[in-house]
Image 1 (cartoon, protein in one colour):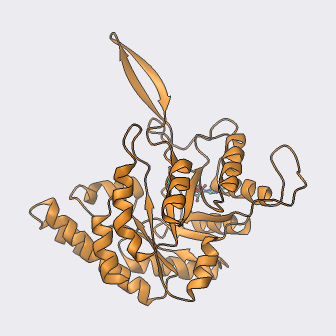
Image 2 (cartoon, helix red, strand yellow):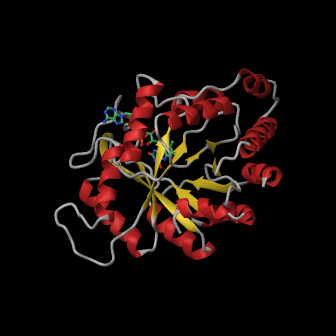
Image 3 (cartoon, rainbow, N blue to C red):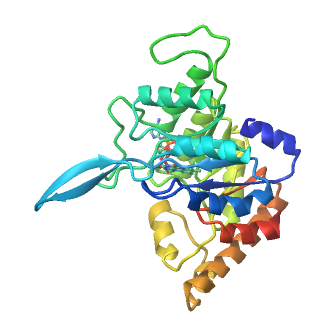
Length: 317
Ligand code: FAD
């Protein structure tokens, strides 16, 4: 079922969902299942599986460094298929512009269609570690909006190089990213919202936001988006702080602000066990307020760990 159909079916009830990251290459998938199992009692209608970009690694060959391009966490589609089969739940693979040619994306979408996966999250991806700015892959897309366009075309039977008359067109429901505190490269929140509107105009069916720690930022973002005519569901993405280092890491990587009260509470913690508890409590308050405000779904960035998300879900759902 499509994400938008799950939302309609819930008739105003807030749904619980979460996002997982594929394991590092070579690791057993069992650890992932061990972290999904405890969350299934909250009946997520769908689970997102992220895609990681390729990166350069350097292999020491007798003193000479050999530069190789590799993907450290492959397996997004396989994990989606496996979770769908194991838990009978819909899965949403994240599809990236970065690292993929348009043809590779087409083949990936064809695989999704064969597997009965009809939701995808269309994302640009970040710059590679060595790059300051995102460089489109040769033969790939520059912006997520271009990827949304490709998916919309495919939904109409328009493959990249041929129009195929078929009674078996895919019918993907497409999610895209939104940024309550604006995307790091956008000159202003307004211009970022215009880009978001463009993605929706091209066929995106719902938006999932970047994490935020101050609900007012989300509420203002939704107000502005609605004023601009963005009328699809907007799903808040939230994450509990789990370690002290997050105070520096999250603003640096995701360009999000952390409210002073939360910073003070985390800094006062004696160890990361206490930090985890502070993060859980903050996230419970955030979740309750968002639920009260009638958000369609609460989407948790689990980073593959379930204990804190379970503690939150127990209080909220
Ligand atoms: P876009 O929508 O293309 O926007 C990127 C920037 O370009 C923005 O600043 C936008 O304002 C600007 N822009 C857009 N169109 C134009 C235009 N036509 N002209 C000029 N400027 C333009 N990353 C991963 O690698 N893997 C994942 O699985 C993943 N999952 C994510 C899930 C969610 C919910 C979110 C919020 C982010 C996720 N990301 C993931 C991170 C994402 O890839 C990065 O934030 C990336 O930098 C931007 O992606 P986007 O899809 O928002 O890009």
